[in-house]
Length: 240
Ligand SMILES: [Zn+2]
Image (tube, rainbow, N blue to C red):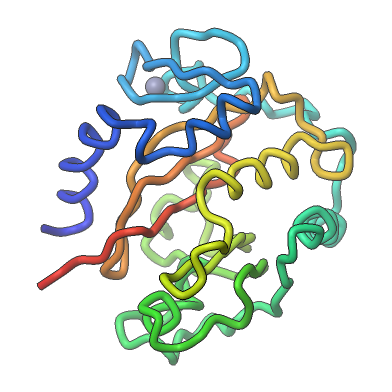
């Protein structure tokens, strides 16, 4: 099965047993409740009751332009420093970005996502990670999006993907995973030391992620139709 087939096959299964696959305990503790989008059918979590998810196609397009949802305007450097400051209290170590020429990974010429920095040998467990929990500002190139640059307003040839990575292994079962990870991200998004977005403006979507031989559930987060990020739980590996 390729990645697309895996996603199509697993999404209904994860949806059926959502409490097992998604950090539902933490989302409930944060005051979120689950709904099913009446337009696309996906499972999503919100503070106030709503009948549709926050994908732009379901929620009425982008509704953030000209609005300020964060507690203040952030310059790039300031946004990164704020991110590091919030996550450092949980022991996350900020890393320098990796090169965009992906010479450590035979499958790729250029880095197109933050996770590429740790593929394949850190993800597989053959090489130890730089720390149990790391943050990285990884410049990513997206040549496959070139035809859409300047047309859609949402495609770029390059961007910085800000990473939150934890490496939980059999030997280190206490490293943060889903339940802790989503609470930490929520605190960054909504906290007074973080971005300070109102919790009512945040929507968590259930989805499936697959890539580089691994796959698992993931939680995407949106505000006013804009995808802010995707927290991926790479708990499965393709077997031959
Ligand atoms: Zn939807």
